[in-house]
Amino acid sequence: MKKWIALFVATAMTMGLLSGCGAAKEETAKEVETTENVETEETAAEETSADDRTTFTVGFDAEFPPYGYMDENGEYTGFDLDLAAEVCARNGWELVKQPIDWDSKDMELSSGSIDCIWNGFTMNGREDAYTWSVAYVDNSQVFVVKTDAGITSFEDLADKIVGVQKDSSALAALESDAADLAATFAELKQYADYNTGFMDLEAGAIDALAIDIGVANYQIESRGDGYVIMDEKLATEQYGIGFLLGNEVLKDQVEATLLEMVEDGKFMEIAKQYGLEDSVCLGK
Image (tube, rainbow, N blue to C red; front, side, top):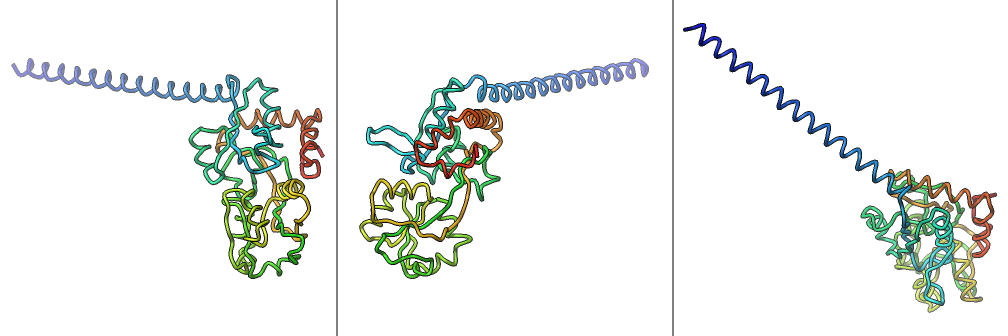
C-alpha cells in the first residue's frame, strides 16, 4: 500500500513539474513574441520616418523674418522655409508649414505635431535638449535703438526700458551671461513676437530692443531710416535644425539633403535672396 501511495505522490509531482515547465515555456514564448512585436513596431516607425515619409512638418515662428514670416500675399515664406521646401522637393515629401507659439515649441515637437523646429533656432545652450543638424548660420544678438535716441553703448542702456522676445536667445543671454547688464535696465519687457516689439520701439514705449541681427537687419530695411544697431554685441550663436532628441534617422536624411544643396549651390542661392549670404556658415 505504501508503495502505491509513494508512486501516486511521485506521479503527481512529476505532472506538476511538467505543467510548471509548460507554463514557463508558454510565458517565455509570449515574452519573446512581445519583444519581437515591439522591435518590429520600432523598426517600422524608423522606416516610416525616412523611406516611407510623405510629409515633412516644420514648426516655425510666423513673425520672425527673414527666416519665417507671412508675406504681403498672405503666404508663409522665409529663408528657412525655402530651404525646407527644397529639401522636401528633393525627397519627394510634401512640406507642411506649421506656425507655432515660440514658447510652446517643445510641446509641439514632443507631441508629434511637428517634425522639427526650423526657424532661426539657436543651438548654443541647447545642445543636449535636441538632436541637431549641422549649424548653418552664424548669428549675433544685438540691440536696436532709434537713430536719435543717443544710445550708443551698454552704459547708455542704464535706467532704460528694453524689449525682448519671450523664450528667445536674447532673453537667455540677458538672464545668464549678461544678467549684470540687464540689472541696470529700468525694465526688461517681454513680447510674444518682434513685430510688436518694433511697434513699441517706434512709439517710444521702449528704448531698445534685444534681437537677432538677421531679424534686426530685415526689420530696419523694411521700416526705412530711423533705427540703428548698436556696435556692441549682446551674444554670438549658431542656428541649426532641431529634431526630437534621438530622431537621428530623420535628422540624417534632412542634413544630407541640405549638404547636397550646399554642394550644388542652391543653398547659397536661397541665402542671397534674403540677404543672408554673409551670415550663413555652410559652403564657405
